[in-house]
Length: 282
Image 1 (cartoon, rainbow, N blue to C red):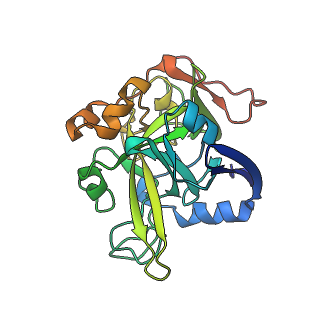
Image 2 (spheres, one colour):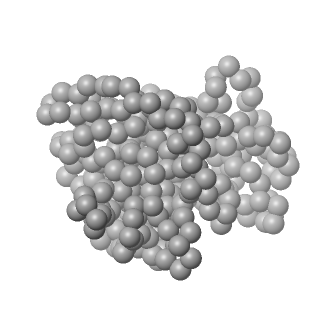
C-alpha cells in the first residue's frame, strides 16, 4: 500500500504552533520507497509512522526547546520527522541516517554507491555498523514520537508461520493507553559541503520479536529460514519512566531498555479500519 499522498506539516514558532497543508505527491513517496529498497533487509522494518505536533511535544513529551521549524505528520523514509534528543530539545530531521563522510544526504554504500536503507538500525549491529556505530558510542540517543507505526501483515497464523497471503495488509500499532509512542532512536548531524546547511538526521532502532503473539505475525516469511528463526523485527518503545535513562544514561542502561512490548500495550488493527481482517488467536 502506498503512503498517503497528503501530509500535514507542523510549524512551530516560539510557544505557538500553526498547521498548514503541504501536498506531497504519491509519486514522491513511491520514489522514496524505491530509493531505499535494500534486499538484505527483506522489508523487515518500519517504513511509515504518524508523528505528533508541537503542542503534544511540549505537553506530553517534555520537549523544552523546539529547534524544529516544520515536519511531516506522516513520515516515510528520507522525509522529515521530529525527534527529541538530550535535554528535551526537539529537532526536525531526515528519517534515514546519513553515513559519515557522505557526499550527499541520500544514504549510500561506501563500497558500491548504491542507496542504503538507514531509517532502521538493528540493535544487534548498531555498535558495529559503519553508519550507526559512532552515534551509538557517543550516546546520541533520541526519542521518536509516534501516534502509530505501520507493519505489513501477510495473513500468517501461529499454526503456520511460513504460508503468506499474496498481498499484505498494512497494520497500525498504537498504544492501548492512548498516549503517543516514544520510540528509541539515534540522531546525527551532517553538513552539506555545497551549501553549508546542517542537516539533522535520525534512525529508529529495531529488535528481534520472534515468538511474540502479535508482532511475530508481521512481515513476510523468509522461506530460506526455519519458522523459529525468522528474525521478525519490532521497533523499541521506551516507557515514560525510562525516558531520562534512555537519553542520558550509560550504554549499559540503554541496552537494558531495549525490550519487546507486552501484548497488553498494543492497540492494533488494519490501517483501513473498514477492513474486517483480524489476527488469528495464539
